[in-house]
Image (cartoon, rainbow, N blue to C red; front, side):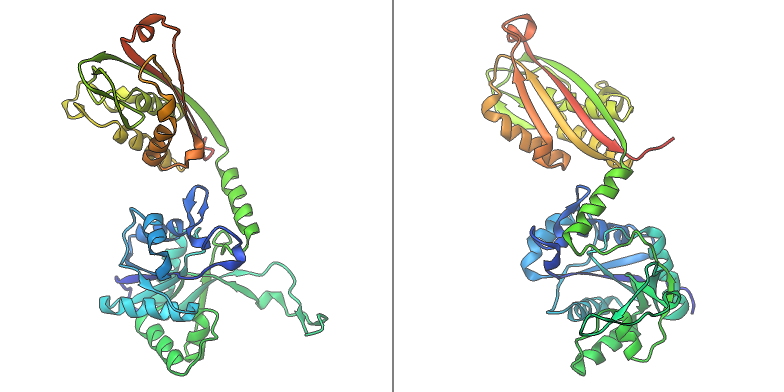
Length: 393
């Protein structure tokens, strides 16, 4: 077949995932601090050869879906059916208007699909018209009867574990799904089985053992441990900032507008809490300081909101494949009183940085009326940040 330039994806995310235990549908739970469905969709949304990603979701999950995949490009989600087979057909029908040449069908519960696997799937579909990723079976397989006794031991050399994304010429798999629905067949466990039933020859290509499906609570525990082991470079950075008071009626502290009898003298909004936190993160990355990335001599930062500085620092961590483990800020001032606003500030930092509030601490102390903070001439802040990065030489 000639190489196709129009590849679309059906991302199946309508299941309830009951075997995964409590915590809601498994595709919306976090693993490694990121929603499962975000990880699964991101690989396709950012792949150069994919022009459309069609999510298929449960209509009850629309709010969770929107929150979980924020920032990723995709088609408007379509509602799934009572079975995976019905959900895939709904996704294919939604894509029909775009007339793709090739479609990849992927389970949202497989969050570790790689760019290389996607490329192999596209190449295989272009070459054969119908293909699935497989990995060898390494354990001995036993066939048992109703009594539980072993009836046969198949040769594992010919056995393979099927994965997704399964890839097909769009027109042939859509027709196969339509025929199965018309014939009342709803018992197929994957799209390759439907293709086989429709008379298609299904080829195989190299899968990926890391591309596992999350099914049970133990799967989540194991994959969390695997991800944590990959982020073994644990770093801590510290930051410090201070701003003097000037005229005004409020100060910005940790992203929160706090009424006060004075304001900050600063080039930006003067948020000492966020500034110290940015320096702590950049320090952990060994990536300069806030002044080197946002020089006060640059007029474009005049009056700038400091939340964008913190978002930038977090993006620097993410770009390195890292995660934030803990953020801590200590405010040093006589007034305003921080205690009543502590949790509001924690929530603000958590929202800006995209980490759970349980990983954010805000503390406060005075300097016992000593020094410039004791004289209420300004506010100081210290911060620390703990991040985890992949080991590199």
